[in-house]
Length: 152
Image 1 (cartoon, rainbow, N blue to C red):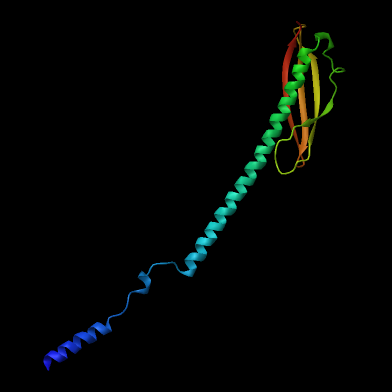
Image 2: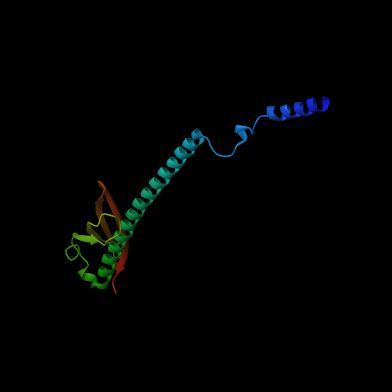
């Protein structure tokens, strides 16, 4: 009978043991999921903002590059002209179109190109400065190039 009591006692001890610990179970709680979602949303918002700002800066940089090319174009036109004909009357202020530079808004971008022609201390040369200015997002942007053109 003692053997039966011992067997019953060991069975009872086995029955009393608790199941697996809930805290040790795999998975995430609802709070952890919400925190992870919030962190992911903030990171996604930051990346979206960075891409947007980067695109706008790239667009403005493209405008400046195109405007500088328009300045160089005018200087090359002056170099191809007879030296005596390089005067402000022959190269007046004009409106030029900056080429399509990408971006969502495909409206043409117009700029004003002006030239300043000065006689250098060396009478065989003329200092020329060409400026292109335009408005973008409420700001006036300007690009210029200058050089000296000598008599041939």
